[in-house]
Image 1: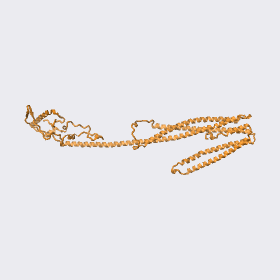
Image 2: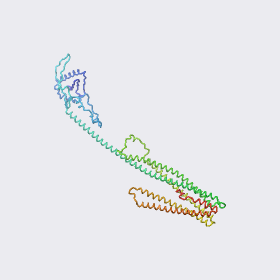
Image 3: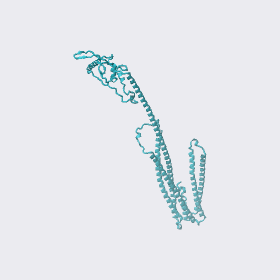
Image 4: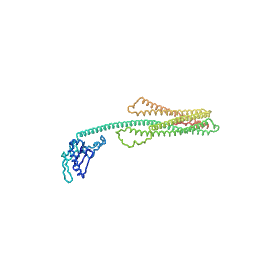
Length: 552
């Protein structure tokens, strides 16, 4: 059976293709003449075989064995696509074909031709006599070309055309499905990430809100404790000042006692006796010095406790300042939204960890400050209690000793004046009345001072209630009672002040009477003069109980 070939002729190049479409011959121009001679010889052989064969080679038969000439159309095989689906991308490359269409490229390179396959013509060779054009050469008859075209074009069958269209349709549909899946997945991904972002941001905002509440809670606790420690410090400072004043007040009685001893050394003769008055004077000096020593010790303790209180107060205030700053920052962060001004990128801030505490240690730090302040407050309160007890005890001791000594003086004066006339007796009574009047005056003053605090409270309440807003500024029963209370206290104080003036006038009258009696008794014994005039005269200035406890 003869071999089947496809012949493509071009102006300067001939391509001889074997029955297998993968074998190509591309002879250059230098060998064109030789190839042409060989081709004529090949045609001659075909014609000879056709004449000898019992059947004729039809064009249909030949092209059926040749197969598809699609590969023969090109110089090299078509490159296969790496992927079945086109590359998915949002860039411009996604709109290009994932592989070039060879048919279109060939149609652009060649003249117009029908889109159907044009079968290759089969030339049935016939035997012809040889002619000699030159010595030793035989000329073969030229091949009969069944077309007036100068070259043969590769044609396609309708099936190929249909399959190509179906392939393009399926490819387009697959691309669209892929794009649609990508679009749906992308929308779902975007929505999912958006939900995650909103959830995380909501949780962060919620945690920020809880953090702000925690800061606000501890800040209020710190503020309350700071107010307490400040109040305690002020109270301790006031008690300390009272203690200092009380310590200063003890200098006067001590000096009086020492002067009394000094004056009693001027007694003459038998009156220079170590009597009960002198013993009580020595005891009074010892008692006063003992009270002063205890006051100094408590004064040193109060000074040290004030330092501790101020240290705790400083730590609380510093912690409050930090809490205020953190509250302002976290509050600002809590109020930030996606549309807020001032938000920006801060690259790498998530990799920076400048924290120095955890929530447990953070709360423990503030709790320790509060506990320390409470401990110092308790110690300060106890110290104030001790100082109050000390002031009361020292005042009571000094007053008891003062009264005891006064009784001794009175008894001694009575003994000296026992033999004296009524004038001397009246003088002693006058002195006793003067003493009682002084006590009355002091009690009146104390009563006036006791009314100052209730008056301040009532007036403060009235003043604070004037700051009520709007309709809350009501003249209710409380307002009326407060006004009546202030007026009643004013009347009470005025009455007491009038009574104090009367008592002072009475005291002045008694002093005047005493002076008259003393003038009348100026000739009396020197001892009576010293005890009654000098010693008792100096002891009239003995501090009162409020002064001894440091209130004035």
